[in-house]
Image 1 (cartoon, helix red, strand yellow):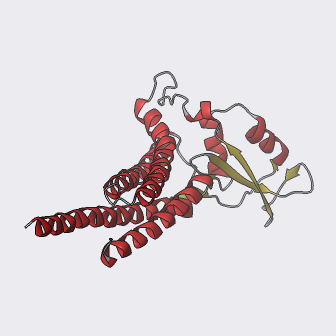
Image 2: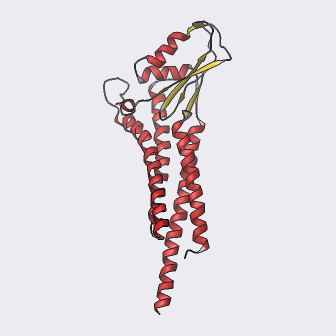
Image 3: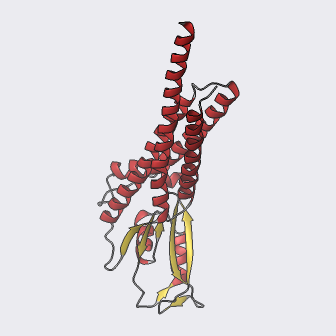
Length: 247
Protein backbone atom coordinates (compact mmCIF):
# COMPACT_ATOMS: atom_id res chain seq x y z
CA UNK A 1 0.00 0.00 0.00
CA UNK A 2 1.47 3.34 -1.09
CA UNK A 3 0.81 6.49 0.91
CA UNK A 4 -0.87 9.36 -0.95
CA UNK A 5 2.16 11.61 -0.42
CA UNK A 6 4.46 9.15 -2.15
CA UNK A 7 2.02 8.58 -5.00
CA UNK A 8 1.70 12.33 -5.52
CA UNK A 9 5.49 12.69 -5.57
CA UNK A 10 5.75 9.93 -8.18
CA UNK A 11 3.11 11.56 -10.40
CA UNK A 12 4.69 15.00 -10.20
CA UNK A 13 8.14 13.53 -10.80
CA UNK A 14 6.88 11.66 -13.86
CA UNK A 15 5.33 14.83 -15.31
CA UNK A 16 8.56 16.78 -14.74
CA UNK A 17 10.56 13.99 -16.33
CA UNK A 18 8.27 13.98 -19.37
CA UNK A 19 8.56 17.76 -19.78
CA UNK A 20 12.36 17.60 -19.48
CA UNK A 21 12.54 14.83 -22.08
CA UNK A 22 10.38 16.79 -24.53
CA UNK A 23 12.41 19.98 -24.05
CA UNK A 24 15.74 18.21 -24.46
CA UNK A 25 14.57 16.24 -27.49
CA UNK A 26 13.35 19.40 -29.23
CA UNK A 27 16.60 21.18 -28.37
CA UNK A 28 18.76 18.36 -29.74
CA UNK A 29 16.80 18.21 -32.99
CA UNK A 30 16.87 21.95 -33.75
CA UNK A 31 19.67 24.24 -34.87
CA UNK A 32 19.04 27.41 -32.85
CA UNK A 33 21.63 26.88 -30.12
CA UNK A 34 23.73 29.85 -31.17
CA UNK A 35 22.93 32.51 -33.76
CA UNK A 36 24.80 35.30 -35.50
CA UNK A 37 23.26 38.63 -36.51
CA UNK A 38 24.89 40.04 -39.65
CA UNK A 39 24.58 43.61 -41.03
CA UNK A 40 23.00 44.03 -44.50
CA UNK A 41 25.27 43.40 -47.47
CA UNK A 42 26.56 46.44 -49.37
CA UNK A 43 28.07 44.77 -52.42
CA UNK A 44 27.11 42.29 -55.12
CA UNK A 45 27.41 38.66 -54.11
CA UNK A 46 27.15 35.43 -56.07
CA UNK A 47 24.44 33.59 -54.15
CA UNK A 48 24.70 30.49 -56.33
CA UNK A 49 28.38 30.06 -55.49
CA UNK A 50 27.65 30.56 -51.80
CA UNK A 51 24.92 27.92 -51.83
CA UNK A 52 27.06 25.40 -53.68
CA UNK A 53 30.02 25.96 -51.38
CA UNK A 54 27.90 25.63 -48.25
CA UNK A 55 25.84 22.63 -49.36
CA UNK A 56 28.28 20.61 -51.45
CA UNK A 57 31.71 21.91 -50.45
CA UNK A 58 34.22 20.01 -48.36
CA UNK A 59 33.66 20.00 -44.63
CA UNK A 60 36.10 22.50 -43.15
CA UNK A 61 35.57 24.39 -39.93
CA UNK A 62 37.05 27.62 -41.22
CA UNK A 63 34.84 27.58 -44.32
CA UNK A 64 31.50 26.96 -42.68
CA UNK A 65 32.37 29.32 -39.82
CA UNK A 66 32.92 32.17 -42.27
CA UNK A 67 29.51 31.44 -43.81
CA UNK A 68 27.89 31.47 -40.38
CA UNK A 69 29.46 34.85 -39.63
CA UNK A 70 28.45 36.47 -42.93
CA UNK A 71 24.97 35.07 -43.48
CA UNK A 72 23.03 35.19 -40.19
CA UNK A 73 24.09 31.66 -39.38
CA UNK A 74 22.71 29.41 -36.67
CA UNK A 75 24.60 26.55 -35.08
CA UNK A 76 23.22 23.50 -33.29
CA UNK A 77 24.46 20.17 -32.01
CA UNK A 78 23.73 18.42 -35.31
CA UNK A 79 22.99 21.30 -37.70
CA UNK A 80 24.50 24.43 -39.21
CA UNK A 81 22.33 26.88 -41.15
CA UNK A 82 22.68 30.17 -43.03
CA UNK A 83 20.20 32.65 -44.48
CA UNK A 84 20.98 33.91 -47.98
CA UNK A 85 18.97 36.48 -50.02
CA UNK A 86 16.24 34.96 -52.15
CA UNK A 87 17.20 36.48 -55.52
CA UNK A 88 15.62 35.91 -58.90
CA UNK A 89 19.09 35.96 -60.48
CA UNK A 90 22.29 34.17 -59.60
CA UNK A 91 23.64 37.33 -57.96
CA UNK A 92 22.37 39.99 -55.52
CA UNK A 93 23.50 43.59 -55.21
CA UNK A 94 21.32 44.64 -52.27
CA UNK A 95 19.86 43.07 -49.19
CA UNK A 96 16.55 41.44 -50.04
CA UNK A 97 14.03 41.27 -47.17
CA UNK A 98 13.19 37.73 -48.29
CA UNK A 99 15.76 35.13 -47.36
CA UNK A 100 16.23 31.43 -47.92
CA UNK A 101 17.43 29.17 -45.10
CA UNK A 102 19.97 26.52 -46.01
CA UNK A 103 20.85 23.81 -43.49
CA UNK A 104 23.43 21.06 -43.42
CA UNK A 105 23.74 18.34 -40.81
CA UNK A 106 26.95 17.20 -39.20
CA UNK A 107 27.64 13.60 -40.14
CA UNK A 108 28.85 11.12 -37.55
CA UNK A 109 32.50 11.23 -38.77
CA UNK A 110 32.34 15.04 -38.70
CA UNK A 111 31.11 14.98 -35.10
CA UNK A 112 34.18 12.99 -34.10
CA UNK A 113 36.64 14.81 -36.34
CA UNK A 114 39.79 16.27 -34.81
CA UNK A 115 39.92 20.01 -34.18
CA UNK A 116 43.15 21.86 -34.86
CA UNK A 117 44.74 24.92 -33.30
CA UNK A 118 45.44 28.27 -34.93
CA UNK A 119 48.52 27.03 -36.77
CA UNK A 120 46.39 24.29 -38.44
CA UNK A 121 49.01 21.64 -37.66
CA UNK A 122 48.55 20.74 -34.00
CA UNK A 123 45.52 18.95 -32.56
CA UNK A 124 43.38 20.98 -30.18
CA UNK A 125 42.43 18.37 -27.59
CA UNK A 126 40.18 20.68 -25.58
CA UNK A 127 37.96 21.66 -28.51
CA UNK A 128 37.98 18.11 -29.87
CA UNK A 129 36.64 16.54 -26.68
CA UNK A 130 34.25 19.40 -25.97
CA UNK A 131 32.66 18.87 -29.38
CA UNK A 132 32.40 15.12 -28.84
CA UNK A 133 30.93 15.56 -25.36
CA UNK A 134 28.27 18.00 -26.56
CA UNK A 135 27.21 15.35 -29.08
CA UNK A 136 27.25 12.35 -26.72
CA UNK A 137 25.98 13.79 -23.43
CA UNK A 138 22.39 14.55 -24.58
CA UNK A 139 22.13 11.04 -25.99
CA UNK A 140 23.27 9.63 -22.65
CA UNK A 141 20.75 11.83 -20.83
CA UNK A 142 17.82 10.71 -22.99
CA UNK A 143 18.92 7.08 -22.74
CA UNK A 144 18.99 7.24 -18.95
CA UNK A 145 15.50 8.72 -18.83
CA UNK A 146 14.28 5.96 -21.15
CA UNK A 147 15.90 3.31 -18.95
CA UNK A 148 14.36 4.87 -15.85
CA UNK A 149 10.97 4.62 -17.52
CA UNK A 150 11.51 0.91 -18.13
CA UNK A 151 12.59 0.44 -14.52
CA UNK A 152 9.47 2.29 -13.37
CA UNK A 153 7.22 0.07 -15.48
CA UNK A 154 8.91 -3.05 -14.06
CA UNK A 155 8.46 -1.67 -10.54
CA UNK A 156 4.74 -1.21 -11.16
CA UNK A 157 4.38 -4.72 -12.54
CA UNK A 158 6.28 -6.18 -9.59
CA UNK A 159 4.42 -3.92 -7.13
CA UNK A 160 7.70 -2.88 -5.58
CA UNK A 161 8.75 0.58 -4.46
CA UNK A 162 12.47 -0.16 -4.20
CA UNK A 163 13.39 0.49 -7.89
CA UNK A 164 12.24 4.09 -7.46
CA UNK A 165 15.64 4.78 -5.93
CA UNK A 166 17.28 3.66 -9.19
CA UNK A 167 14.88 5.87 -11.16
CA UNK A 168 15.91 8.85 -9.05
CA UNK A 169 19.62 8.16 -9.55
CA UNK A 170 19.14 7.83 -13.32
CA UNK A 171 17.37 11.20 -13.44
CA UNK A 172 20.09 12.80 -11.35
CA UNK A 173 22.81 11.61 -13.74
CA UNK A 174 20.66 12.62 -16.74
CA UNK A 175 20.34 16.12 -15.32
CA UNK A 176 24.11 16.39 -14.98
CA UNK A 177 24.50 15.24 -18.59
CA UNK A 178 22.03 17.91 -19.76
CA UNK A 179 23.92 20.61 -17.90
CA UNK A 180 27.20 19.26 -19.25
CA UNK A 181 25.83 19.49 -22.81
CA UNK A 182 25.03 23.18 -22.43
CA UNK A 183 28.37 23.95 -20.79
CA UNK A 184 30.39 22.05 -23.40
CA UNK A 185 28.55 23.71 -26.28
CA UNK A 186 28.90 27.20 -24.84
CA UNK A 187 32.62 26.80 -24.20
CA UNK A 188 33.10 25.22 -27.62
CA UNK A 189 31.40 28.16 -29.36
CA UNK A 190 33.44 30.69 -27.39
CA UNK A 191 36.65 28.92 -28.42
CA UNK A 192 35.43 28.81 -32.03
CA UNK A 193 34.72 32.54 -32.02
CA UNK A 194 38.11 33.15 -30.45
CA UNK A 195 39.93 31.15 -33.11
CA UNK A 196 38.14 32.64 -36.12
CA UNK A 197 37.70 36.35 -35.52
CA UNK A 198 34.25 37.63 -36.46
CA UNK A 199 34.10 40.64 -38.82
CA UNK A 200 32.98 43.92 -37.33
CA UNK A 201 29.28 44.45 -36.71
CA UNK A 202 28.45 40.75 -36.26
CA UNK A 203 26.78 39.89 -32.96
CA UNK A 204 26.50 36.36 -31.57
CA UNK A 205 23.83 35.31 -29.08
CA UNK A 206 22.40 32.15 -27.56
CA UNK A 207 19.32 30.73 -29.25
CA UNK A 208 16.09 29.28 -27.90
CA UNK A 209 17.23 25.68 -28.42
CA UNK A 210 20.01 26.14 -25.88
CA UNK A 211 17.54 27.59 -23.37
CA UNK A 212 15.27 24.57 -23.81
CA UNK A 213 18.18 22.26 -23.01
CA UNK A 214 19.06 24.45 -20.03
CA UNK A 215 15.48 24.29 -18.72
CA UNK A 216 15.53 20.50 -18.89
CA UNK A 217 18.33 20.41 -16.29
CA UNK A 218 16.34 21.74 -13.27
CA UNK A 219 13.28 19.72 -14.34
CA UNK A 220 15.31 16.50 -14.27
CA UNK A 221 16.87 17.46 -10.95
CA UNK A 222 13.46 18.15 -9.39
CA UNK A 223 12.17 14.84 -10.73
CA UNK A 224 15.22 13.08 -9.29
CA UNK A 225 14.69 14.75 -5.89
CA UNK A 226 11.05 13.66 -5.79
CA UNK A 227 11.84 10.07 -6.74
CA UNK A 228 14.68 9.82 -4.23
CA UNK A 229 12.59 11.39 -1.47
CA UNK A 230 9.66 9.07 -2.16
CA UNK A 231 11.88 5.97 -2.21
CA UNK A 232 13.74 6.90 0.97
CA UNK A 233 10.66 8.03 2.90
CA UNK A 234 8.66 4.97 1.89
CA UNK A 235 11.49 2.71 3.00
CA UNK A 236 11.67 4.38 6.41
CA UNK A 237 7.89 4.20 6.76
CA UNK A 238 7.86 0.51 5.79
CA UNK A 239 10.67 -0.22 8.28
CA UNK A 240 8.73 1.46 11.09
CA UNK A 241 5.55 -0.43 10.28
CA UNK A 242 7.44 -3.74 10.17
CA UNK A 243 9.11 -3.04 13.53
CA UNK A 244 5.75 -2.09 15.04
CA UNK A 245 4.14 -5.31 13.82
CA UNK A 246 7.02 -7.41 15.15
CA UNK A 247 6.83 -5.68 18.51
